[in-house]
Figure (cartoon, each protein chain N blue to C red):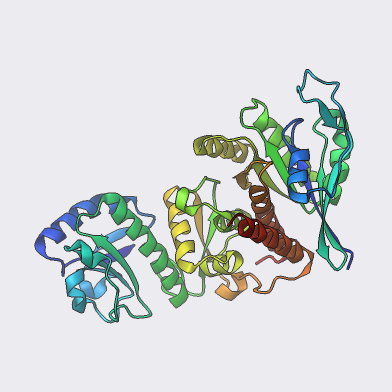
Length: 227
Length: 179
C-alpha cells in the first residue's frame, strides 16, 4: 500500500481531491491510502504552494487553480530524486487514476531499488511479465511499445531492462506498465536478482543484431523517403 | 561471415505470404506459384507449391531469408522443413476466417514441436477492431496457456511489415541473450 497526503491543499480542492480519490484510489494498479505527511509516499499540494513540499518527498502531485499554472515550467523546486505530476483543478477521475498509476509504478521501482520491505522484499527486484496480450491504446502503439510487450511476453523484465531493450524513455515504459497493469494484463514478480542481472546487453551483436539493424535502416529510409 | 537468418511465414492459402515477401525483399524473390486448381479452397488465380523465398543482403555475406510456406495441407512437409531452419515465424491470420484460432493453435503447436523451436508472432493481416484482436488473443492463450504477441499489419505495406519483423527480431535477440 502506498500512502499520500493532501493536507496542504486549500479546502475546496482538498474536498474535490478526496472525493475523486475514493473512486480512483480503488481502481489504481497499486493500493493507496491517506496518511499524515510525515508517512506519505506522495504529497499532493496546491501548485502555488510548492514550498510546502517536503524536501525528502520523492513523488509530488500539484493541482493548479489557475489553468495557466498547470503548464508552467517546473523551475527549480523539482529535485532530481522527485517525480512530479500535474493536474488541473477540474481534474477528472480518469486523470487522477492516470497519475496514481504512474506514481505507483514509479514508487514500486523506488522501493525495489532501495530494498524496502513492503512490496518488494529486501534483495529482490520488481519485474513485470505479460499475463495476456492486449492491444494498447492509441498513444502506446508503435514498434517500440510492441517490442516492449513482446519482450514481456517472453520473460519478466524490470523497467530499466525494458528501457534498454526498447530504447523507450523510462517515463514511457512506466506509462506502458501502468496501462497494462490497469488492463489486468501484467504479473508483478519479485525476483532475487539484482537489476543489472535482469538487464539486456547494451551492445547488440551477432546475426540477429545485423537483421535488426537492416530492418531499422530500411524503415528509416522509408520514413525519410516519405518526408 | 555468410550467416543466414531465416524467417518463415505461415498461414492459410491467400493470406498474403507471397505479397509480404515481395513487400520486404522487393525483386530479390523466387516464387513457386502455379495456377490454382483448388478454387474451392480459395479463388486466387495462382498458389504456392514450394516455398516462396526472398532475400536481403545484410553485408559481409550475411543474409536474411524469408520463406513463405504453402498454405495447403498437402504441403505440410514443406512447412515442417522450413520451420526446422527458421529462427522466427510470422503466423499470418485472417480473423474473419472461422477456423483462424484452430489453425493458429495448430501452427503454434507445430512450431513448439519443431527441433529449432523458432519464435512465433501472430500477424493479423486484415483490418479488424482492437476488441476482436483482444478476444482472439484470449482464445489462443486459453488453449495454449502462454502469451503470443499479436500485431496487425498489411502485407502490402512495407513500413508495417518491417516493423513487424523488427518486433520478431527483438524477440529473437532476447532469446539469444536471456536475462
